[in-house]
Length: 192
Image (cartoon, rainbow, N blue to C red; front, side):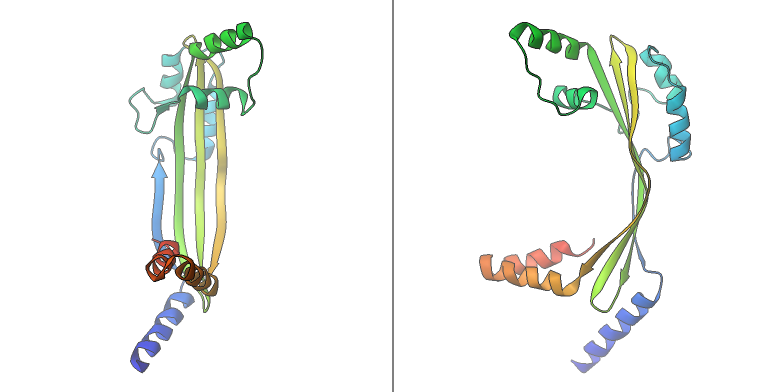
């Protein structure tokens, strides 16, 4: 038991003392453009009223580009008009439905986030770095109506989790739902 405790302390000192352990990265569409700034520049070149194929050519994409998605009706409404509730007479709602039927909305994620973990005496810190953007292209009758770039150009943030809080929440779950649920909760909270 003493050997295990010594080994654990040595491991925490070693990992805590270094720059951290790389947990990998998540990426979508990161090979399409050189940088977030490059994507921003290309989007600025898009002209309202441009034909769908011309817009795709400027962006160097096509309808079969991986991760390029066509949004459903609810998502289209949210992207075009926000989350507002549409109200009005039956005639107005029908006109709105007809307008929505003319829209075609493409979304393309462009993200790359790397994660590193640092261990401390009583906590661990996950450091996120990268960018997370989404290009939204809204076409009306086959012509570009709006091109939006939403998200964050630069992500550089940390998330700290204290071991005592993690154990307390696991213990609370164990008391409320049973031992296996409490242990399961603790392991689900640990980084992958």
